[in-house]
Length: 270
Image: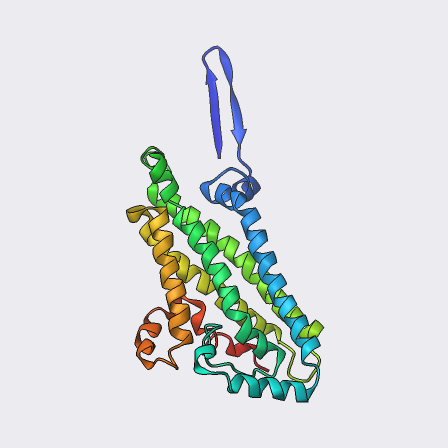
């Protein structure tokens, strides 16, 4: 993109925005949004990676024998009903393996972190401009309101993709570095599927806030999306104990990390 600025008495000054500048610099709304959010992306990715690796090392050190893992499986099976849904997942799969343990104890936490980040980010995508009264001014520029919203959304999607890559790598590393018994390995394909689920949970929750923010404001949109998120977590966790929760839990499953144990975390099994 080039622009010429000058007058009749002075030559025009030509400025050019390079393709790379448009990707990461200040040459587009997408680029600026991505640049502004880079610290949040690194923090979220680092936190999720640390949670996965710490869960892996903790399980590998605490349950290094077949006997200790059999005892763990018996303990989980005998948990009282009030405790079965505390991790948002009442159906642990292959709990005696490293991947199964991570799925049961850490999966929902990862989903919650990405969902909260996505809610906070997407609830402010358009609401901030609307609150400042600058949205109308920006919208009459050649960009237009729709393009602004799309570019901001795609910037968040790019950030989420980076987080997904970090999660996939660290999930695979957890199995490779800290697995002590056969079945603890997490194949790359399964790690990728696991990471994609983490990203989709975050985007599903954030989409609620993104859709509501222009109408009800950032705070209310984030609050409603957060209520759906937390409500889904506990509804799914306790639907086995309270069957009346089952129908409602199915309605909110895509905006909550609660379904991790029944669907998305199965790829972690050997």
